[in-house]
Length: 363
Image 1 (cartoon, rainbow, N blue to C red):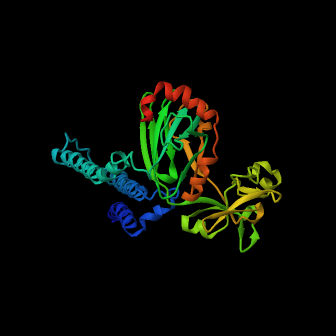
Image 2: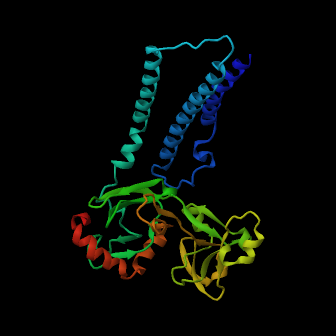
């Protein structure tokens, strides 16, 4: 009787997992994933990931459960003799063919998503596509945008240390490495592209939401412990007072508990907390209803924040320093951001390395 109950529980676990998969809202991703903001194919990537995870989890519990069951079912008992077996061809064929068919089914099921992400790139000639060159090296990321002539490798190129893209436009990244293998990882955009020296990598996405940091609510300034990052659609962005902080650097300083020992001491959870410190004396651009106006920094309800950008390949002893960020802006702010960028050391780096070693990557 006990063995039957145990066997029933073993087979019940994968069935329960399967039910959770079919009943749970797939876009919620069980709360395990970073927020998906890639409107082009992010949901398809999440669905594929969850399907594979569910299949693997079911097979894991089934296999390990059977092992546990057999330990109890065929344990040594008085009067029982061991029976030696030379195998069972039907059983061996079953556990070889079934996993093989499952892998074929997964491969066929994901082929459409793979083609969309890796093969069906936006047209190079489409004027609505945002083109960015990404240069990886130990231990830094650099980014370059074409100027008014819409061509790379010319004098009006824009070089930056932070990736900045608009919402609701296709963004096409051309990625190269100066030294070793790197891997561009944008978790919120479901993008991960290995960067191999001597090869040009390409990846694209469409960002649908903007990361911002909440500074005020109902007209009241929030204390540090209540400030938080939230995600806005471009429409929500236009309805609120959001500071761009382009014209007045230093008006919003991002801090954490390590810079305030007393606050860290009071926090019993041990979790590091972050907040923006606002300089009331600064005048900043605040965007509302699609237009900007100057105002005091503490009048802003939100300030534009950033999403994560990292290297997902162990590229050396200082690999951790390649953690960077991506700033996502509404199209009207992005279009005003590009002309404000002047020539930087990033331009020189692209000209001396990228343009000389990989001039064909500019076409």
